[in-house]
Image 1 (cartoon, one colour):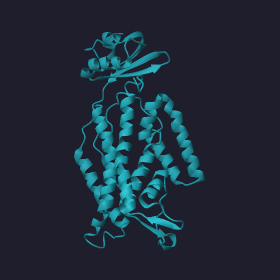
Image 2: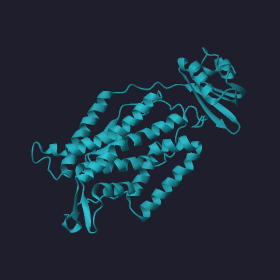
Image 3: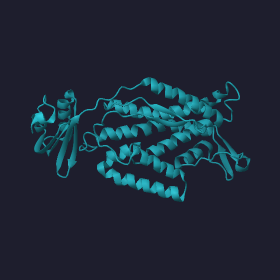
Image 4: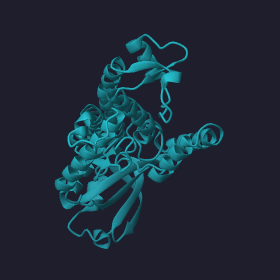
Length: 334
């Protein structure tokens, strides 16, 4: 391999790679080098060597298996763009406003009828934003621990008064180093969110009011019950009698949303948390699982509720494929 052909004249790629791989074939492009061979070291040690040697020169190694060999792709590292924290702050403040309006409505108060009417939305807004924020900061802090560049959470305001938000997201701006890092990043959000969603749901249900179904006014919105939510109803209220339903307190509504968002994010597809987890566990075999999940959602949307078709669209929009981590060889227990 002629280093001058790669455009990386300052590096002796041949010697760097040969320290960790018995080279059998190379492919050279002006912007990348592809090496095929056998590892001379464990994959984790090989990646540490390659990252240490190539990183200071702005290059990044990608290691994966191919039949009985390994393939190493060396390419320029993309510098993550600057994060504009002012944008995060503006979106957060807008979401505070929209969730206060939604929360006031959930409390039965018209936030526009009185100058202080929006204050009735504080319990819902505070509970929901805490749950969503915990979820995204779980991802963010775990990214930091694995030296993955990520933005602070972007809260997304919604003009629709039911919930006042479309949720929150972070942007991961650098490659994830390993399957273990991918698993931990994927799990951190749901776990952190549930730590706040479950107590919020319990407290909110304690404050909620069971009523006879006939006494509930027309136009009331009905929310479905998951197994976890049904269990918490029994735990908080001792169950509800036949012919009764629950008028959810705004904090309970925030908890319900938190549980629902967590469940959606755990679907094993694309860039959802479940997609990260599925790839970490299954590698490239995750794709049939993602396709199977999509098929099940379409069937449910056709036979049960069209809500599942919306969820299926979400899965398609996020993408059924998942980019591999830099070290796609070392197993989770490696």
